[in-house]
Image 1 (cartoon, rainbow, N blue to C red):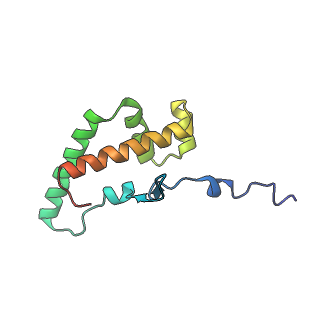
Image 2: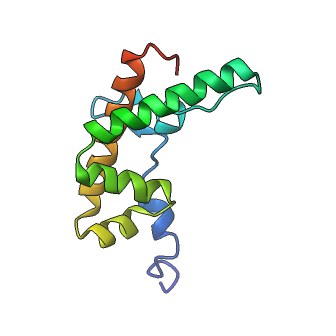
Image 3: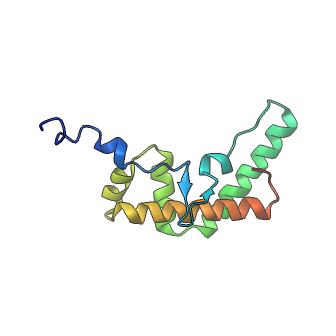
Length: 118
């Protein structure tokens, strides 16, 4: 009885994967880690193109993201958990999740508009 009520594995069982998100109809969307894949080789041409794409993405996101989305993205990139982000911002974890999903869609839309293969 003690073992069952200990909640030892609660963080693992209730965590939400950012790289494998499923939509309501059961289809999975590409994760942010797939949308922002790094360069595959150390070729100077690829490095220049990647650098230009990164600058373009940063410029686009600085104009497209809301203040909440930018804050959530910054905290996420710092390695914060959903609970930590929600605590710092003063909102619910679902609000954090929704903001990250919007960021992912906006990044995908930007990459699609630039015709970048993800």
